[in-house]
Length: 196
Image (cartoon, rainbow, N blue to C red):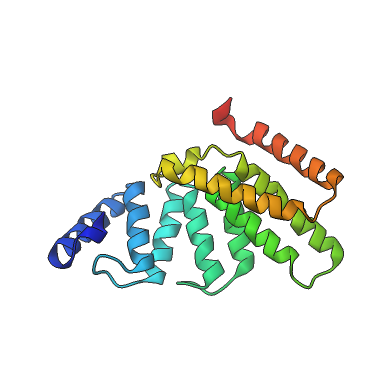
């Protein structure tokens, strides 16, 4: 919305957005974080402050905040590059049934499975990637709606999850696929309480 304005109007809008965000309005926090992470509406890109707002979003109880903060660590934007911390934070968002974090975690695990590591670790990380991509593929995206990202993002996110799941599945045996699908279904039945 702020992209439409320039100069004084944009600065005024960002000022109001900042005031709402500082008042703990999650949608405003998310919007301000985006403005700061991309450098929009006359505001310079500020990765450090964007990460600060990502942390505040997570602390306010919005699981998407963990994804945002993990992304800072993946990219080394505003914080030192740290893939271990990125995976820990991404997992916190994924475990709170945030579809974007589930996809992010599946991608991180899949990337790890492609690294030059021992075969057992490759299989474990590949299986975890598949598990989280299955979980995301079945996610109705409810947390997206709650966090104000927008319902239009739920289906493209599920499509991304399905594409990743299908890519990973090609490297698995039918028994491995079945086992991970059962584990994902069990996780969903135990953790997706809003569907019950």
